[in-house]
Amino acid sequence: MPLIHVLAAVVAVTAQPVSAHATHLDGPVAAPMDLDFEKPSVRVTINGQGPYRFLLDTGASPPLVINDDLVKELGLELGEAGRVGDPMNPEAIETHSVAIGSVGIGGARFDDVEAITWDRSALYPGKDAPRGIVGFSLFKDTLLTLDYPGGRILIEEGELPEPDGAGVVEFDAQDGVLSVTIHVAGREVEAHIDSGSMAALTLPRSLVETLPTVGEPVAVGVARTVNSEFEVSEVVLDGAVTFGPLRLDRPTVVTNDMLPMANIGSGVLRGCSLTFDQVNQRLKIVPAAGEGVASKPVRKRYGVMLGMNPSTGETTIAGTTPESPAAHAGLREGDIVIAINGTPAAEVSAPARAAAFREPEIVLTIDRDGERLEVSMSLDD
Figure 1 (cartoon, rainbow, N blue to C red):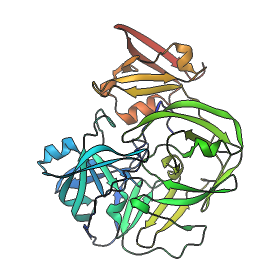
Figure 2: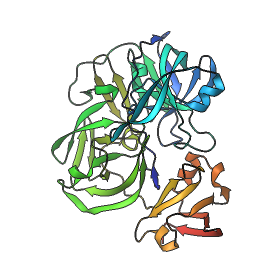
Figure 3: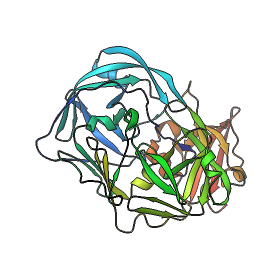
Figure 4: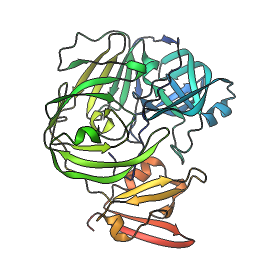
């Protein structure tokens, strides 16, 4: 999970439009995939226009979610109203359907796609922000490979072999959201495979309380789903997590009181190549050399919990972790972040912001009750 502040995970959109779209492939199609937002994104054309950056989210059930500003930019017509949300409140957001004639990714084309749209500007503000989400069900008729180490996706025809419990496992796709069985400290647990989450492994607090841990959970930030925001904590599991060929020994897990399901995010998946066969509900997992055999050291954190004012779009301090560099530096809840390392906060893209918070030192310019202050922090504090 990126150091921050905000774990900007887009959790499953639970109301799925029925999409009978057609897929057109002239052989296997490879397309670049980047992790600039700590999760996969690809370039997508809409009705021949673009390309535009879209996140690729296996935790989103609609085949396509398109930002309302892009809908207006392309002159697309709105269809029927609907409602979507996260597992805590699945009907929190009003949406509209949008009929898309064609969606292109590399040399692959998907015709007659039923997308949904709403105002998503608060989720990803700033320049280079994604213009929407490519959901899992867009690839319902194909094999989809997320090759994290290779920085690409592969779309092709075919099917995976029978599950063997090791390299190939079964999955369920109820409501279009992918879930698998993992083992956590020897216990079977159902978990979502969620490329749209920046975290590594997230477990419900009710489950963590029954597991062996090293110490107690410590608050580290604020998580944001499509319609909810809540505090998250981290704790080291005193045991192993296994999933197909992956084994994580004593991993640091994220936990919260709100989300009911375990979640495997891009923090783990980025060490693998994953191939999804939706027709047969099979998943092939190929770890990169040396990945998936042990947990990585816990990274030092500033302990800054960032939030956002939904009315103004301003980045705010939502809180700080006790005894953290942020707490020692005197950051307070409600402070408005004006600049990060001298660059206006509104001009700092999400990837650049995440990178800044991974550096050993950072300077935040803040507004506190009309007074402008500079706050310097070091990970050695």
